[in-house]
Length: 80
Image (cartoon, rainbow, N blue to C red):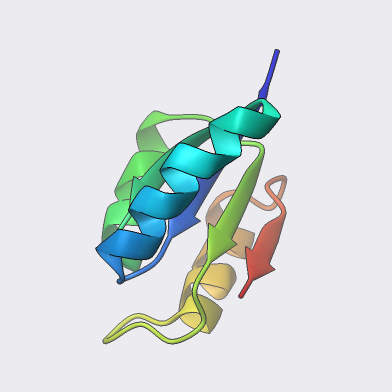
């Protein structure tokens, strides 16, 4: 079974790049282009790790980390 990663970045091109490259390493990748959409995805799906951008408009990576620690403390978050 491959790991499932949720990539959160407001840059759609970076999301697309990671969605193409990570599966080459056996990592299933889903993307979200905002923190609110990432939270919606996390309510519906299970992920092994969240990889998030730090600087996003409105709801940044630090705020997403804080919210995730409340909702899903079992999921590690990597901030880039």
